[in-house]
Amino acid sequence: MTTATGAATAELAALLGRARAGMAFTGAGISVESGIPHFRGEGGLWTKFDPYKVAHIDTFLKEPAQYWTYSLNHRRTDAEPNPAHVALVDLERRGHLRAVVTQNTDGLHQKAGSGRVVELHGSSHAVVCLDCETRFPRAEIDRLNREHCPPSCPACGGRFLKPTVVLFGEGLPVEALRDAQSLAMAADVVLIVGSSLQVYPAAGIPRLALEHGAEVGIVNAEPTPFDDRATVVIHGKAGEILPQILSRMASA
Ligand code: APR
Ligand code: ZN
Image (tube, rainbow, N blue to C red; front, side, top):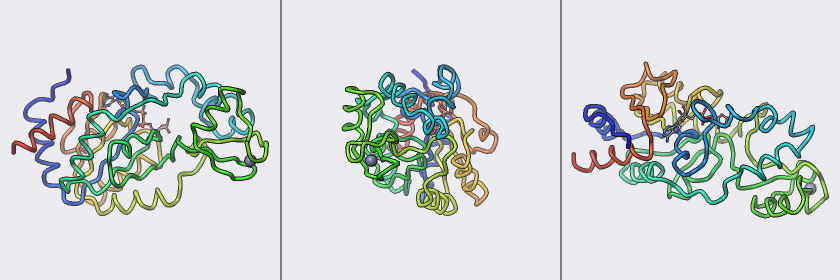
């Protein structure tokens, strides 16, 4: 059990309690306690698989089977929000968070009840055909993928069925990036949870908030490049730490 030190818990609770235009910025680490692996750092997926092979647009366009075989063997479809996701919903309901800006594509913030979620890297819950642009629910294509991998488009027979996620080598959705940038420029507090903060342009969002005067709190299992610019840093498991922060706020 990760227990944040009393001083750090009190400091992060106070920081979040001061937030009137706060935003959360989350990464894969917030979903690890829901059973979805993260990418970098200890035990991360990219220490086992080459991201260029399974998550780059160039490879996908050469051979979609690489992605769909990886998905067949590794995609988690039964993940549920964990206490960290729920804590962010609580912070939003108390008026301390305006939105969650996430790099995750798992939809767990929405499933937990967050009202405003900006998905910088898209969503893995839909699939689009690159030939006829028809969109399908992911579950339907996963079913096809189990019958025949890689799946072909039910509408046109095309071979490029792509999840609506941002692969390496692709740009971010313009509207999501614009939303995230305006939230960051207006933020008084940014709570960063479960990100190695190594992937741009996404990691530029908390940087933008800092440059516009926001205070930053970080909850992450390992040190990040932003730790020295944060007001408060707690290293540990988000699903254990965030509920402690919320109960500290409740008793304040
Ligand atoms: N609680 C808090 N932090 C955790 C936990 C946990 N239970 N488990 C792991 N972490 C931390 C890891 O130590 C790591 O620093 O979460 C961080 C996750 O970092 P990454 O795996 O790099 O994930 P992320 O920052 O979201 O990656 C950004 O890279 O591969 C692309 O598109 C993908 O959106 C992803 C982007
Ligand atoms: Zn098609």
